[in-house]
Length: 176
View 1 (cartoon, rainbow, N blue to C red):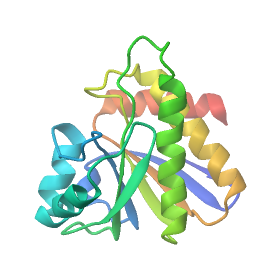
View 2: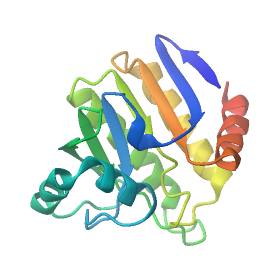
View 3: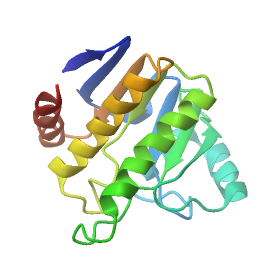
View 4: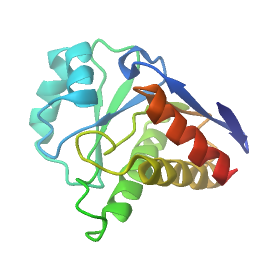
């Protein structure tokens, strides 16, 4: 599915984020920037050891924030590592932290003069965020950002399975 907001395209696909050719790939990182499972592990494996060395130099990234490294062996120019919240029932500010993770990633992309960015479904895997709520926050934050910022031309959500895609598609239809 694809929609246009001003001059930007927001696209949903099922796929492997490590194969993306966008200027920026967003990594759903942990706060210690140590690599791990899921998207984080896949990006680190595909990128090679250089981004882990950069992550070690950075050291830490709190939930809701984002840091940038080069992309190693990936086809992107940069990897933005953002830390989404672990879901703890929705009463600990998780929504604000997840919104911030997306917004900070988009702002970092603009600082790097990127025209295109690929996102995974941040916090919707092992961090336990309810899928439809995570999709709504991701999409609303992105739509609001591209309405205000003309630099980003393409935002692609690269989703790891059909059920995740379906949830994002359903939420996107509600927002447009």
